[in-house]
Length: 133
Image (tube, rainbow, N blue to C red):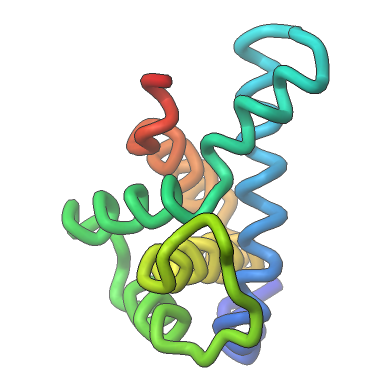
């Protein structure tokens, strides 16, 4: 899918895809590290794929200047989007930042830049506070 098509989706739509992309990447990462029982893998993956951890990753990526101008624009629009769902386990601020991170991942995935997608996903796992847990 070309970049123009990826730009046509709403930030929340991009986040919908980005959530799936990130979840799959984290699950593959967990499985590659150790073939443990599925319940254990799910618990460990959940520490990466939650609003609080994703907000911390978002802050680190933004602080590093890693995002391109287009990605930063997607992140800004997603962070400011009116979300209809609520979170019980994280602050509204963290939830918006997590949505922004997921939107960037969805945008890059739908843009078809496989190398950039892989780079950002590896960066997300590396910067996650859950990595040390």
